[in-house]
Length: 496
Image 1: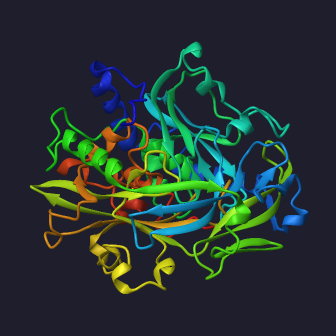
Image 2 (image 1 turned 120 degrees about the vertical axis):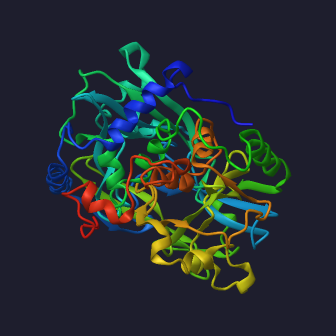
């Protein structure tokens, strides 16, 4: 079982913290930066963060090479990350055995969000950050987003702002609200984890020019804009203590103990063998290498591609690296229904070869539909047809969001929350369970229970009116974006 890693508030302060977060999530006034001012600031940051990403060849990839003994794609320092091979055998999913390239990055990075009171309202310190794989250059990231290689300055670049708030929080008098190891994409990373932290700081911490203080209301509103709040910000936001629930939240159809027992059963009984192997051994097993990519023979899944980057606002001004380029836009959807009046989410116990604990809870649907086109219809992901046929009034959240732009090139998923009726049974296949939003929040106090896609949808669920155990909550539906954030009308999806 994963260990409790949260270093959050003691029980007698839980209610007070929840109340402060609820005020921030509904505050219509007292903001350090207005809604209109935010977009003016973001436009200016995008002008300042000019970045050029140029595709190149592996032979021209400065600082990287294919190791002569294994064929692995490695950095000359031996740090950052490597692209290796992986052989997988499993009883999960439509394909029982395959080989693939995978990113191996064993070091643990820090994803840290600083919060503080301004004008009596909690604000989040958000960063405008450019990444080479972002579809639009600059997106909104947490206060700190850094690998160990970056913050120990292996690249010889500049230091990471605000890092000491998270490496030495107590020595600086800061209060840790959340501190937990969480995974990243288990199909693309092998055992990759980051430390997700939320730290309350004092008034001495001010926003630099690439940073801004936003209330939870403002950040929640920005989650409804395409490719604006990045993956690292979303996963940290999901780890915030949940501010929605009353002292006696409505019960779910499964107890908390029953849910954890079900997860443990799935972890114990699923069969998966994921063994790293030299990258050269993947070639000829469905994958091939050319001068400028490593790709699947059917053109499916993803490719590994080399790029050169020039960026005037990063720790170093220019560098080269490989990126994983997915083929197609994914669909990531959570079905939600009311059972005995209480909203429940349908989660899926997923096996992915890169998970530390074999199984993590994912959304109801998580796939790239094009990757299943060559398979029989009965091997399409369960519930995908229902999501694709959802009526507009059933869709509570629908936004295309980017995945991590430091490792993935133009990786996007369409994230949806779909409310269904009694036509979907309470009894579902054993690898699925109906759980409440409160139960998801409780699981997020622990490592390796919810995958990174599910964590994005937890953050999204907390923005939707009326989902929190059937009670009125601070949030809004898709139709309310323009009302809640007047400077951010629904027509201004932020693709730029």
